[in-house]
Image (cartoon, rainbow, N blue to C red; front, side, top):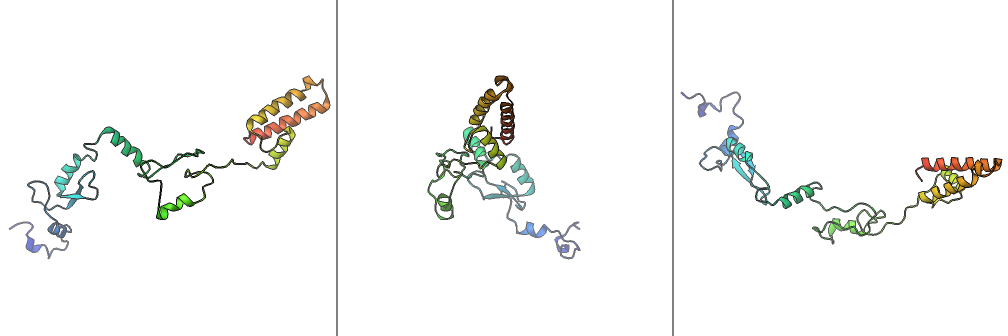
Length: 203
């Protein structure tokens, strides 16, 4: 008598859960194999979504030698890897480059929901639709007072602040004014104002 006769499968307390799957599965597609093909294996490149049906032993052997990029040039493989970083979606250059455009592999004109991005406001030129205007930073009260001490307004650049600071230090330094008390106070105010602006990152 066989140890696992098919007539007693139905009366077992715990029937084999894979028995029904194996019974309905097609034959293994490996040449000369008669086992049920219960495992899927990808066909390969340019046939995504298509699978071979193999038994357990042959799917393991197939996967050991499977190469998605077989027959592909090194340049094409490198390009695929680069595009895979962004999920094969178009990318744009960041920054204030007004001539930024989407990658050439993708159409510039879009329709449907994708066309929304061509019509929306883009003040920071994230999508390369225009040139962003100069961003004005509003000075805080302490910074505004420091700029006023140096005789500058809120549009002054870091180079302007440094140049003005050097000029005032030379003019009001105690050695250059013979110990004049008023000039010494002004010198102290200039040093304090420059320190405030430097800590604020304006120079």
